[in-house]
Length: 423
Ligand code: FAD
Ligand code: UQ1
Image (cartoon, rainbow, N blue to C red; front, side):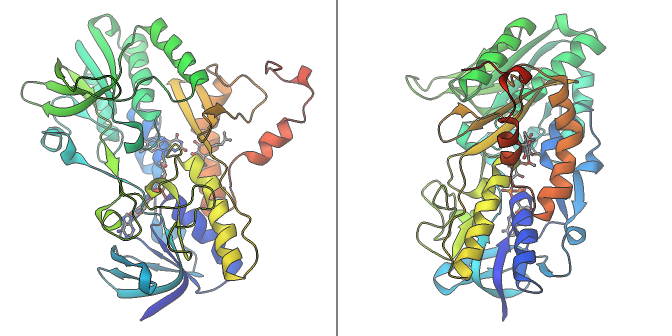
């Protein structure tokens, strides 16, 4: 049977970063990736694609072209995890054994959880930036809106990646309707979210609320999308969360951007690796599985209570690489994930609020010597032109572990050179 020192399931953002880093530490033939997909996607640019600011083709790259010869690539899907016997089963290559396993499958969209959504997708004003099949359509549909109600939905925070994306596209659409199409006065814009507030970190929630007030964007909290009727153009929401009575209400729409609920693939959920909610149950700082010492998790599929972002996965990758290598060489395990997450909240075609925070404490944790609660042109440039380069050229080679070094370097600046308020 096939056997590898380290087997990585999923060649997406977290899996590829770990594989390329470990391949340098372990050398030829010892690292393998399993992934059935043809393409790797830079998902953070999908929001920009949805607003016509970025080409879809520039967000994808063939997985086989990203994997150097040192790494064995199996183009196959894992169909079963058997951690008690240190192997996985695959649909094309049978059994593959490992000494260390890294689970990096990401999360998938649960289309069926919203009644009627699957049939409604892509027709009569229903779209999403969360699938590569619909991002370009989002832009086309935004350009087709003339009047009526535009709704932007968001599922519960633990069921989604990039928790800013459901509202980023609202700001970009509003700007297009107001400044480019002149139809803003005829369009009602509503953000309807299952969560109790605009953003989990107060500093950025305050900034976003201010923008919503200024731009006339209506918000409804603790309301979860449960059904769509594309013939009537109606969306039904259920009141959820603390103090809610579980009642439902229906809204008519001319355009609706749906952020559907997501969760790990079934193969993960039904495996002995999953916790009750279906996520790979790892220790939140070491990334080591809570029951299997030679199993690690990274990225969206894990139980780590962070904001599911590439930014968090970059720091997690550091912990995983250090600890896999440490465990295999009997050194101490000193890699740890510190809770860093960030979310570039694009609020217009040239402005962005760069939210950076510790997801474990909910406190801002910023890199740059500016007040990142304010919309910034420089941060939009970062999002559109710099972060893709960091991602493809550094993170995907396993050498980007988040902006921690820059944060510490900037912290040396004397206060009069920074625009931060001294606390
Ligand atoms: P993924 O990158 O999704 O990769 C998972 C891989 O696992 C895939 O290649 C898949 O084919 C493979 N796989 C699945 N099942 C199996 C199986 N059974 N066997 C083998 N392989 C399997 N993050 C940011 O930091 N900043 C942003 O601005 C940002 N914006 C976003 C906007 C949108 C619209 C979206 C969708 C995401 C955004 N993100 C952003 C989030 C970011 O893209 C994810 O957090 C990141 O991709 C997670 O990496 P991952 O490795 O966990 O999963
Ligand atoms: C980041 O490191 C990262 O991964 C490469 C992202 O995904 C594209 C991000 O969106 C962000 C914001 C970061 C954090 C980096 C900086 C420089 C703030």
